[in-house]
Image (cartoon, rainbow over all chains, first blue to last red):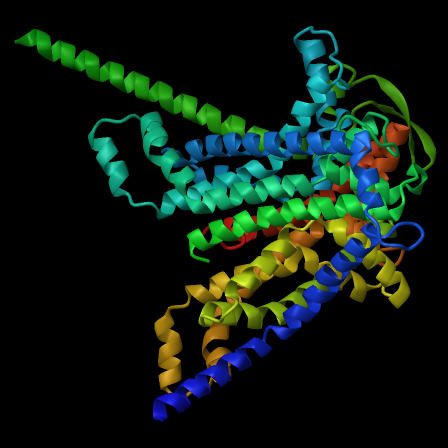
Length: 298
Length: 308
C-alpha cells in the first residue's frame, strides 16, 4: 500500500517534470516544426493549389540541382577531411614538450572566432591571395597564376573551411588525450618509442576510436553541407552572383541564390522541395549523431 | 678500456644533437602553425591600417598616388599606416548602431534560450525521464537542420504577424542557432555536479524547487556565464537568419559588414577595401576576446557537450 502510493507520487512527480518541457516545445514548435510543415506543404502543392509532386519532378530534372548536390558532397567531404588532418597536426605540436604551449594554443584557436561569411572573403583573391601572388611574382619571379580555375579555387575553398574548423578538431583531440590514462604513454616511453611513434601508436588510435571525435567529425560534415558562406564569396568572384550553375554552387548556396533572386524563375514550391530534400539528408545525419551521442553517454 | 667510453660519449653527443635538431624542428612547426592561424586575420587588420603586404612586396610602397580622404584628394605614398579607416568606421553613424543591434538581439535571444533551456537541462541531467532520446533527437534535428527549410515560411509568417525587422522576431528565430547548444552545454554543467549533493539537499528536507534554487543553481552560475558567452559568439557570427529577417531597424553587424564587402567585391572598388577590412577586423575583435576567455569550454560548446 505504502509502496503503491510512493510509486503513485513518483509518477505524478515525473508528470510534473514534463511541464518544464512545455516552453521548449512552444519555441521549437514555432521556429522549427511549424515552418517545416509549411515548407513541406508548399513543396507538395503545385501552382494551382492542388497536391502534386510536380515540384520534386522539376527539381530532379534540373541539371543544376544535381551539379549542386555533387559539389556539396565534394565540398563537405574534402573540407572535413582537411580539417581533421590539419587539426591532428596541431594536436601533435601541442602534445609535445613545448615552452609557451598556452600561447601557441591560444593562437591556434583564433580561427574559431572568425565569422564564416568573413572567412570566405578573406581567402578570396583580393585579400590573402593578392599578397601571395605578389610574393610569387616579385620574390620568386614566377608568373602570376590564374586564381579563377577550378584546380585553384576548389582546394582554396576546402582549405578556408578547414582553416576555420581545424582548431575544433584540435581542441577535441586534446581533450581526449588529456582524459586518457598516462600509463600507456609511460609504457611506450619505457620501450623507447620516439615522439612520433608514441603519437602514431597511442594518441591517434585513442583519438579516432573515441565516439566524441566521431561525433564531432560527423557534425562537422553536416555543418559543411549546410554552409554556403565560403562558396558565396567565390561565386561572386566567378561572376555567378545571381545565376545558377556556377561551378562552386553547393546545395545550400543554390538555395541561397534561389531565395534571393526571384529572377531565376523558380517557383517557391521548387525551392521548398530542394530545402526539404536537404533537410531529409541532415535528419539522417542527426540519427547517426544520436547514436554516437549515446555512445558518449549523453 | 678507453675506447668504449669514447664511443659512448660520441653516441650520447649524437643523440643530444639529434634531439636538439628535433626540438628546433618542433618550434619551427609551432611557429609556422601560429602564422597559419592568424595570418589571414592579420592581413585584414593590416589592410585596415592601409598596410598592404602585396604592395610592399611589389616594391611600390613608396610610389605616390592620390587618395581621396574625406572627399578631398590627398597625395600620399601608397603605404601610409593610418588609423583613419578604423576611426572612420567607428565614427560612422551606422557602425555602433549595428553593434548595438547585434547586442540587443543577442541579449534577447540568449535570455529566452536560458529561460527555456535551464529547466530542460536540469531535468535531463537530474532524472531519467521517459522520452529522453526523443528530446535529444529533437534538439539534434534543431541543431543540424538547414536554415533554408524554415526561412521561407518564417519570413512569410513574420511579414503577416508584423515580426519582420523587430528584435522580438529575430531573437525568436535565432533560437534555431543557439537553443540546442545552450540546452546541451547547460546539461553538461548540471551533470558535473556530484549526485551526492542533490541527495544531501533532499535529505535535509528541501523540496525540488529549493534544491534547485538554493543548492544547484548557485553552483552552475559559472556554467551559465560560459554558455552565454559561447552563444554570444555564435550569434555574433550568424549570418543567414539575420540577413533574411532583419531590415533597416535591426540589421546586425555581420550582415552590415558583408553587405559592404559584397557590394565592393562586385564593383572592385579598391578604395573602400581598406575601410571594409577595418570593419571586418573590428567585428572580429569581440569574438576573439570572448573565444579566448572561454577557450577551455570551446570543445564542449562546439561538440554539444560531448567533449569535456
